[in-house]
Image 1: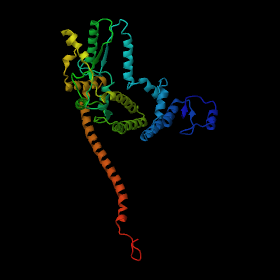
Image 2: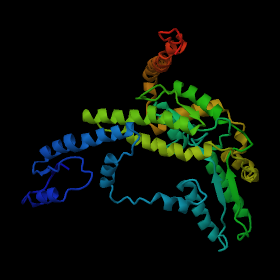
Image 3: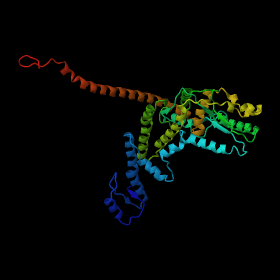
Image 4: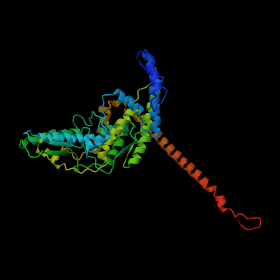
Amino acid sequence: MHTSLVKSEDGIGHKKLLKYPFEWAIWYPDGNVRTNWYTHTLIVFFFQTLPAYFVDFIFLCLFMERLVIESRIIGKNSWKIEIPAPFCRSLLGRHPNCYTFSKALSEAVVAEFAGKNIPICIMRPGIVTPAFKDPFPGWVDSLNGPIGVLVASGKGVLRSMMCNEKYGAEVIPVDVCINLVIAAAHARAQMPRQLREVPVYNACTGSKDRTTWRQVIEIGHKKLLKYPFEWAIWYPDGNVRTNWYTHNLIVFFFQTLPAYFVDFIFLCLFMERFMVRVQKKIHSGSELLAFFTMREWIIDNDAAWSLWKMLNPRDQETFFCNNILPVDKDAYLDSVVFGARTYCMKEPVSSLKACRRRITVQYFLHRICVALFYMYAVYLALQVFGYFAGDVSSYLPLAMSPPLTSRTGQGV
């Protein structure tokens, strides 16, 4: 710390710091106090904030733990309570994350009221996606779940994600899910008020209209090129992987490292830094989804889809469920990408033409960079091979030379 907005009384504290110095001090303790806010802010920027980002960037390149920026963030949010990782893991038990753990807790609380003469049922939705029809096709107002991944990929900041493309995508549009909740409440009202077991319904596509992640990725990539996002940093060419090591290598070199570098440049230009914060959100969202996208889920959803048959013909048209199957995946994903761009990112339709021109330029830049990367990799491989081949060849003349002879003509 090099400055503080307090009034100095004496220098006793500085003398004691020199008498009892701390371990791992990164610089000589020569901070001072100031009463001028502008001078204080200038000193903080050049001698505290800028070095903090630089040191953390070096730590990142050396695969070391980054702590300078984190300590500044924790200092700003001192109210935040951090649960120790071992205790958190023991608390979660067999649940993979806090999301599923909180769902299980809520179901346990609901089950406690089942025997108290309260009509209760439980609806378990799959991965909730944008609306199919109501209030508008593709309507969405949150970046949680797959929409966050979609937007990050469209912006060019997501290059890799853990997902097995052969598995089924257990997703359900939000309006269909709400219709099933209403239908479940209607069905529960027809049952006896007190039941021995709580009725449970699984709201997902299941075997009714199976869609693989490969289909979602292929169609989604085409729609991202049709409706490109504004301010896309790079061409949206991310992919899914099943190998954890390859995935983390790609994430480190093409997501994390550029994020810290860009934020450092923004810091030097006195601009707002956001890339590291965005990458942390992407990382947490990807980890949450990876548990579901890396596994094959076989879910019995016959009970949920049978709810629609219990409605009268007029309600069946209003609360659509079964009558939309099979879904036109191309048309639905078209509305999903357009909805994410329009309703979630608030990007106007008038900017589409300029965005399409820009993404065409980014495509050629991307191809050139990929070609240069592979050429440089081949060059390095040849250099390394030549280095080791040169070491071996230097011993070959000695091995192939005739034996030395003594003056008497006998071999040595």
